[in-house]
Image (tube, rainbow, N blue to C red; front, side, top):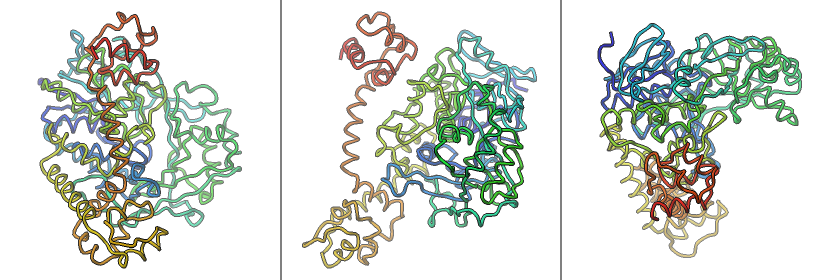
Length: 620
């Protein structure tokens, strides 16, 4: 059956695996996607949503490079919201509520429509290694499948254990078995492994809820989308709802703490700091008498509801009893209880910036196997691993992104350079160049790179160029056009901004914090000029004018620091011969093997004086 040698074998068909398979195949590699269950390709294992703070920026970046996540989200969303609109544009983050069933279906259909992608349902339980290189995989059915590169995207399946109260059983996801054999193979090869934990809340029957006791959370009045391509605009939306726990709920939950696998020590792995279980919230934030619960529909037609904020591994009877005390949940019927899952991961300091492992050539890791959490974090790693697996096969120079180029670059650099001992989640605060790395300009930042490598289409590149030209036209108009006091002073007064006494350039007025471009659109002459432009073009021009000084300053800082990124360190450099640096630095530098002085400077334990020694040694 598998006589031919594949260019790339992707193991696992979650968000990382799907993007890895799509990117490698679209670049021209022959790809085999191996999954334990063809019915759960791109399954949304946790909440039925894409995007959010910093995560929305990542989805836009994946889309700009030519990935599928943004397109599929647009085709299957049931609600769209732009978060943090009250803050500056660096913080604006798109988020979509998705139809879980349609999301997975659309991913499968797009993969099936992608030439060069083959599928195989089986469990990969080992690797075939020859001369320090991976040359294929073995499966539980006894098959040996040859490949030039292998991308592992195993999610939470590696020796996964599900916990519900005192019940404990193997599984990678509810009703799905764990993957065995692969961890043991990797450990024998010399890889360091660890355990992590994540959790999920109960799913309930929406027909049993009383929404009149909750706050409605509707989508944006003018919903946006994720992809920069011509995907459908959302016309109708489903609302989410908000309710709260209370002291009675907390008291009931506490009755199950003795049976909690987390508090009893049955779970050894660390859970996500920024997405704690409800029992963890009660314990850590004991001063709070309530916690927010988001009631999220799972799709257009299903009655299943995701109880966001109520992640738990307490006994199912305790979950049910506590939920009944939440306003609106008095008659709740549970479809599936919440549970915790513990799984193997491999500290990502064992990877290169391409996500290829240092120990075994042509072997790549992406997603939760690297210690991350979240669909978006997994998807971007899959995209990058797929790109670099293809380029390794074709003997093309590796593709990486810097910290000033993309949130994807920040995420991968954080993982590879600093490592993580808890599930890593992306936040805007992790990026030094937030004003440069906005969600609105991901296409302008990255599409040219995606197009140059052959992943972003000509059509996508044409759309970006048209947007750039239109934005320049609007910016030029605002910088050159003046307005009289008679036309603008009433608007200025209404916005508590000082009036003008003579003609003033529109750009100068727009740079005031109280004034928005929509204020200009109330003036007929300006409205006539700008009406022919798309909303995102007008928004882009406004951001460039308002934040021009900040953007220029951040670009200058990035250029200075990028000089250190340009000073490369030879591969397998012997740090033991540098007697002038600390022993801790020698140890850390030898383990990480940074590619550049810039990366070396970000390693925990490497001091500025150690960096100076490296600079001197490199002749700088």
